[in-house]
Length: 79
Image 1: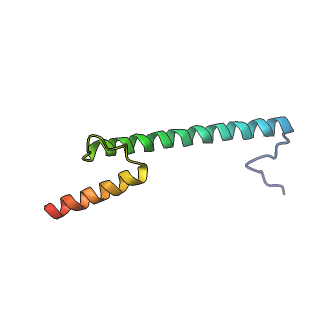
Image 2: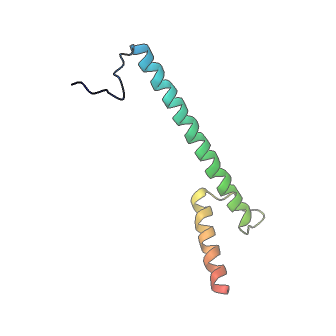
Image 3: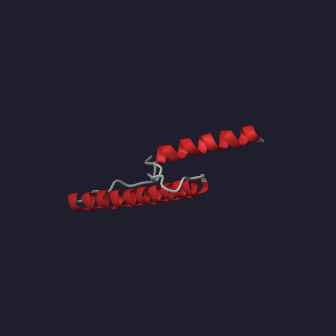
């Protein structure tokens, strides 16, 4: 007795396989760009929240996180 398979094996042409890979890569790249955009927006919001000095250059990502950590630590000690 033969059982039904949920998925059938498809024979795809090399062009179809290549196009499928390109589409998947494009979608993955778009997701990564969106993720990085959201991360950068969140870091920019955090930078604006932290106290700054007027002529100080923009903080890097790691500097922003470290400054936020220190700032929160200091505020908690005050309370």
